[in-house]
Length: 203
Ligand code: ATP
Image 1: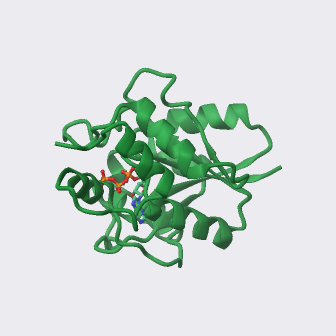
Image 2 (image 1 turned 90 degrees about the horizontal axis):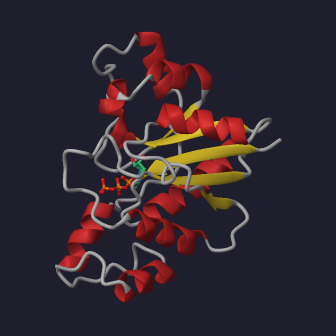
């Protein structure tokens, strides 16, 4: 029986902010593995031109970033279903496929103000412990968003992890690449090589 951290996102591209916080969260929570789950199209980003690399590229970059590290895994579960993918459904599938394992959901602090809009957030919180990754520039709101109950909100903010924070974002990386600026201190070398070879994020 393993403790697994489930880390969803667009990963467009995966960057050191994802990798370093995931590793720190694993240490803090004494988890055996983190499972990165790239979204087919994030339902939270449908209305923005946020996600620009095709799913197969985002998946490939994650696989390169993870390499042969036994503590890191990439799941294509959301890419096998038509978008949009919802966390509640993904967790149900992962739980079905990994009976006996404990799943903990990892969520960046920037997602907190919109957490009340997630499909069946009550079910998610009732079935899955949640751990929040602090992120520079994204304070943990002291009031629950929308119709969130106080008790449920307490549960969420009780999961904020005391780990180092990294000021790295995929949006800034995409913009920098388009402008020809260096980003090699923010993403793994193999991911940078893949971006170059496939001419991703260029104007
Ligand atoms: P974008 O800039 O395109 O919004 P992003 O850098 O936030 O991208 P995502 O793939 O959207 O990356 O993030 C996946 C998950 O990782 C989300 O829960 C997000 O909040 C979290 N995350 C991303 N970057 C960081 C970071 N630097 N520190 C902590 N959490 C992060």
